[in-house]
Amino acid sequence: MEELQLYEGRPADCTGRLEKEVRTYDLLDKLGIQFWRTDHGWMKADTMEDCHIIDACLNATVCKNLFLCNRQKTSFYLLMMPGDKPFKTKELSHQLGIARLSFASPEDMEQYLDCTPGSSSIMGLANDTENKVQLLMDEDVKAGEYLGCHPCINTSSLKLRTADVLEKFLPAVHHAPIFVHLTGE
Image (cartoon, rainbow, N blue to C red; front, side, top):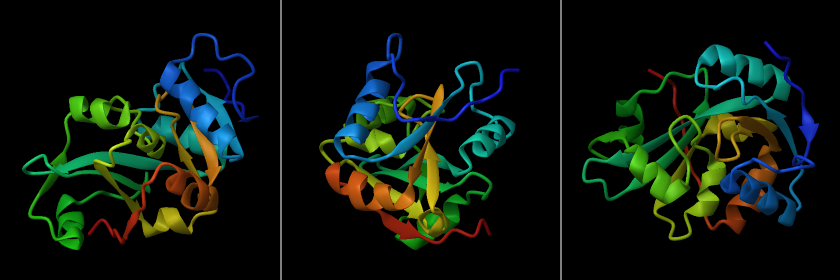
C-alpha cells in the first residue's frame, strides 16, 4: 500500500482530473481559502479503515456526508457529521420536525451536487446554484478547527479550516447551515 502525502493547494498539473474536481480547486483559490490535499486514487475511501488512514494524513476529522430527502422527495439535505458518530434517522428527523428522512437517490445527488455515492461533499454545494439542498452540520463538526472533505470525487481528500468553510465558502455558494446536535442515541 502506498503512503499518503499531504500537499498544500491544488495539484501542479490537473491533467486527467475530473472537471468537477478542478472546479473545486478553482473556487477555493478564487475565494482565497487555504487548503491541503491528499490523493488516494488507489484507495476508494469507502470504508472506515480507509477513512482512518486519510484522517491521520490530514490531521482533521473527515466528515461523513449523507445526502438525504423527505418522503415526498421535495426537500433535500446534506448532513455533515463526524465519521465515527452513528447516524440515527429518527433523531435527525425529530430535530428538523420532519416525519421521515431517507437516503436520496444517486441520480438526485448527481443532479444537485454533481457528486456520486461515496464522494458527496460540502464542496458539492457550489454546484447547487438553485439552493435545492439544505446543509445540516453537526455541532461537533462546527467545533473542530479543521474539517476534511472530498473535492466532489473520492480519489482525493481536502483539509480546510472550519472557519473558512463557514465564513468564506458557504456565503460564496449561498448556503447557510442548520446546526444539529446528534448523539447517535
